[in-house]
Image (cartoon, rainbow, N blue to C red; front, side, top):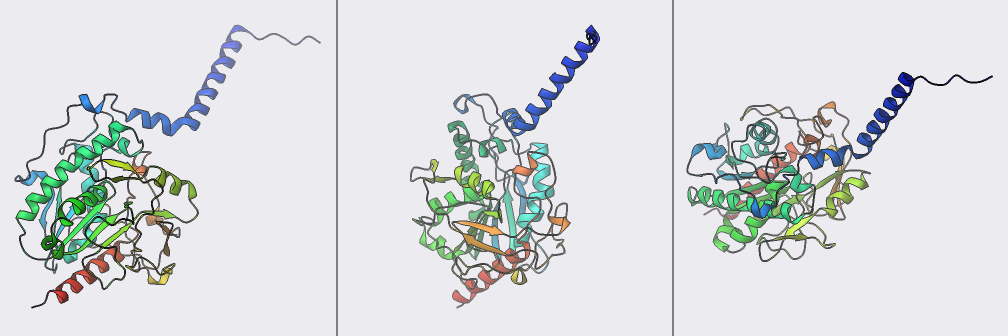
Length: 368
């Protein structure tokens, strides 16, 4: 029996279905590449006109300026925030970019700056941060944009330091902010022994920095009761070797000329935030002081901590942690948000206790 031939409308329908299927399959396979390409400014950095520089004498150049929580200690805390700007229209963000500023206020500040509020007054400059796109590629243009952001970090630090000529300092940088803080430690702290003595602790959170040679002027922290040292780590959930590979493959560090270069198989510093020590094996969950999802909280409001949520260990230069069970620690948001630092802080309570312990050690060492 002869099979009836398809009508023109049926042919169009089948062809349309096939095209939709192929398009859907392509999007599924290349979804990340498509979105990443959409963040590319499509202009060489050498011909790019960056936003105008911030004036750190003005209050609006600071996300936090001498923010003080009730009962805070005597430290002066300088905080460099992580990436909050996706990109697309430029390599670097203007400090008044509304979406980036909203992400900073809603997520980055309450989750990553607030753990240090009990140690003292906290200041966090706005700066012409490099876009998220620059952290997803190793192109030279992207490196130039990341190096450009250091100009603002250094200018803000100098302004802030001039306002605090005495007393203990705590320096904190997260992700892109940690990368910039790493260079500040090399350029400003290592070069000035008197200033180095004032640093109670420095924190390079979600930041890779080479273990050898140590160029920051401060050693990695060996124990929690130690002052004037560096807590640095970049975290990966247990078993996610693909994420670890991406992290290490994209790792860059500062050379002596102030340029970002590849790690070239160097081991990174890893200080376990649960123990405050560089070594010691896996810290079991019962030692975990607590993570928190502080997104949306106002300054001075301490979130409820979820303790004993994770175990963690330093291995091969990375901090490997067990997957938390709480719904509070589920990643949310779109594709770009999931490539920024997490919208919660698994080590909120541990960092809070760590900063207070190192500040106490610094004060005992400098007691007159």
